[in-house]
Image 1 (tube, rainbow, N blue to C red):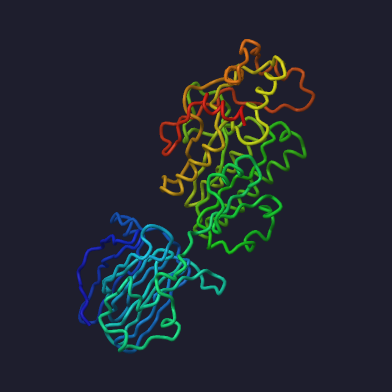
Image 2 (cartoon, rainbow, N blue to C red):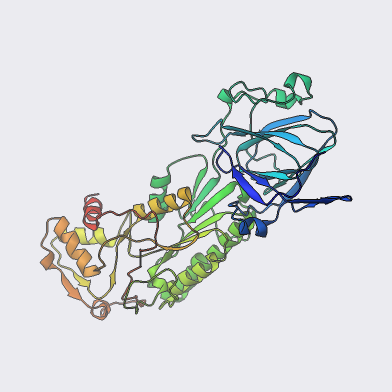
Length: 470
């Protein structure tokens, strides 16, 4: 067996997205050789952009004879392949849904070479030397309930040029009976779970992501996030992302004894459970946060890295949830403000008052930006599709900041009513006659958008017109 000693650690891209070939340093002398087959720290230092895919199983397939041929199998997990002894000819075919479906890459692997095979890419090989030990790490355990996709080794469309003709080698009966490419059912994407699916953001996410077999929309009755059985409620390794749109948002009721308990259960206990599951299974956790994590005393816009200082119970629970989610390796904390979506909201209330001839008193000392749920949903979609940097991102409407009084005037104007019918009042004046508990509000809810990628810029007046006419 000839091994290439003295290589530097490096990576090579292939025509199949995510399929990466690695050259590995192998150190040898008269006694034999040694290599670090998977060394995450050195790979990162070398600038090799491989996911830290969290392997949970290490397998070895030993092959006695030259010409042993296996595959083409695509599994719903990532795989890191090399050989311990011997040499193989490998063939990989993209069997995922998308533009590169059917793309082929072939290469020889010896102990100085490895390849990272992403989920849904068909993997196969043929041994070129006797006593070949084919090794691979995977980030999920085999399950009969998992989704698998197969392609016939002799498929004429991908036309793999096997070094040893298939008619001359031993192939299993199953591999011989796998379908040709035209009959292959592509591997679907990793699942996405949307919690809080019946809320205003949940409904916007459903409209944005659509109805697909790999997207699951779960309301409170479908999935109890505080259940002690949550870890076994799903086969979590099948999920690529969880979008947590479930939250307790009754700001004033959160100040009551029962409301405080509910707020902590939904905004902290449930979030902690999702964070634990996401961390354990390599899932991207998308969590929606709030301007209420700040006290509103800053003179300028709040940046993602600003220290949290919530005033009331609701803000405290959201801040606690943010801190928990920040420990998840793959996370997006979407911090937003003044959310307007499908259903009852401030904009529709003002439009109704205008239509009914009621002249409202509206707070004029709280400043922020309206954020529409369809814009939040579209931004989340872009983050997941395009791979925005993990961390905290401010996601609100764009343009100049406004007070609630300014928003009310804009609503009256776009609906054809006189905005001067509105009276601006302070927060203290507005709540002076309140019969129940009133939570403290941040006076400044403006979030800094300068570092937010993929934000959709839609004029506020255009959005107001659409919502008031719906």
